[in-house]
Length: 119
Image (tube, rainbow, N blue to C red):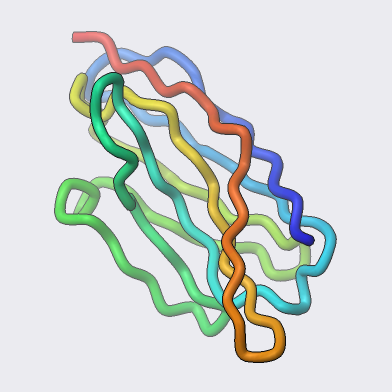
């Protein structure tokens, strides 16, 4: 089992910045990657950015150039630095983790943190 605890959401004006944090605990030795997803009201959850244990990152087109995912391996924490925020970035942001055990992948989710960008 992997537990994820997010923090850092809030209300910000358009053009502002926020940094989300996600601390992992539990069976962290099995982690293959971690990432951030978001879900706006009335929409499906969508990926924002991911980072593997090897440091490879991937971004959604909407996040490229504005968001940066990073990790502190010593603290088992992943960050999402969000700059130049837009009202359309308003959503609940979820931390996710993918672990691999005995050839099977397992997904874990945090409780979510609200990000609201005002125009």
